[in-house]
Amino acid sequence: MQVSVMIDRVYGALEQFGTTCSMEEVVGLCPDLTWNQVYLAIDYLNKTGKVSVTLDPDRTYTVRAYSSAGEGAQYPRHDHVHSTV
Image (cartoon, rainbow, N blue to C red; front, side):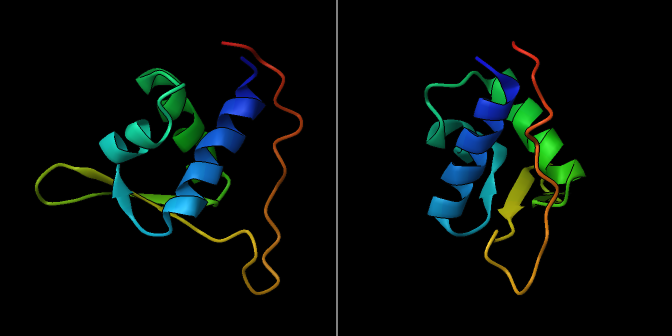
């Protein structure tokens, strides 16, 4: 599966979920992807500013998606990602 497809799948699931969730919940939202594939997508989305990832005091990673329809927000496209996993 192409990395760009995984990224789109994870970001779409996060947008549909509509709130913050743990990494484990993100994995549950994408049952067709492995934990590693979800992590790779979250890492990319975090670096490009589409999501934020925080570590809670109880050592749980929380992911929050920023809406792509935000007020004039321009996010970098990941069309250039062509690797396969």
